[in-house]
Image 1 (cartoon, helix red, strand yellow):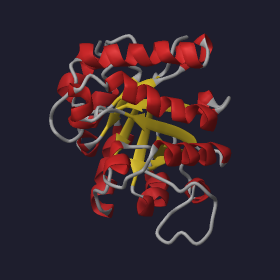
Image 2: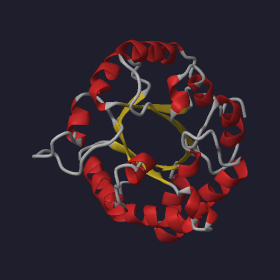
Image 3: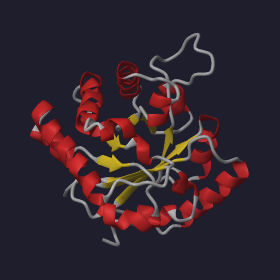
Length: 250
């Protein structure tokens, strides 16, 4: 049947209850392609509220979590807490967590392992900086970041989505060309074949994230190894519906 297209909306640290109610109303009204899985990454304080008003056909994700279930970790939230208030997913390893908060591959892997153990599904983010791309290190970086995840995921690949996000294209208005994005996605799939199995590589859904908009989503969605998007700013706007439905328009 092929890989089911999956679109994630990452609201980041944005919106209040009134704005959220309007966004959710738009999502609930649709129409959304039933052949596309949609997941919304919500600020932790609003996860329960969003789950209570959002149609059940759309998933809810936490935007981060800690690596253990509970303890003296002031300000953190656990995978168990995210699940307890109704979310099914968590986004881990986002470039902003890596670059602003200094999270390393090892910590992200520990978080992924615990989130999966707790019963959440994971959107695991990887991607290179502009300096790394200009130095010709893109593949080295994304392969290293993915390699760190292998022992954390173990045999639980069906509950993981990889999100390739070139850091230089996030929030900048710059987007990797469809061919640039396709090339990295294809390289990642080839790497997975060599380092896991052909079955994992064939079934792994790899999203593209980096200034995806309604105007470029159709062309990106047509690429054979791009299995969806992780959308930032545009997920707060009505055009997010068009992005979710981009595969229909291909």
